[in-house]
Image 1 (cartoon, rainbow, N blue to C red):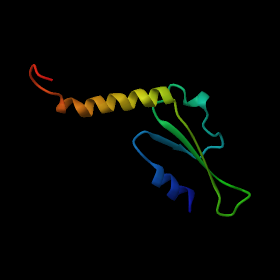
Image 2 (image 1 turned 180 degrees about the vertical axis):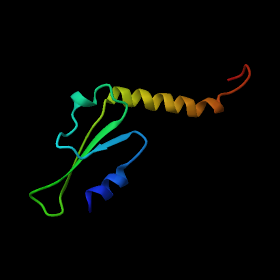
Image 3 (image 1 turned 45 degrees about the horizontal axis):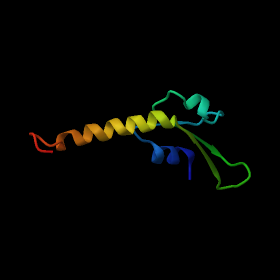
Length: 82
């Protein structure tokens, strides 16, 4: 599989893909709202690929909670009985 094809398959709303030499780490993911992904060929295996990913797990969890709350708001009961 070509790296460009894999990058296209992994592309999403909260994913930042890089093919830089630096792999993402918890240090450069801190404070970021996106999941940082880096792709590289494995020099030891002809068909091998490396996928490195890092995310600020607190920020991702908070973002997910807010999105869930926004999605559930229209289903909130109306009136005094809950």
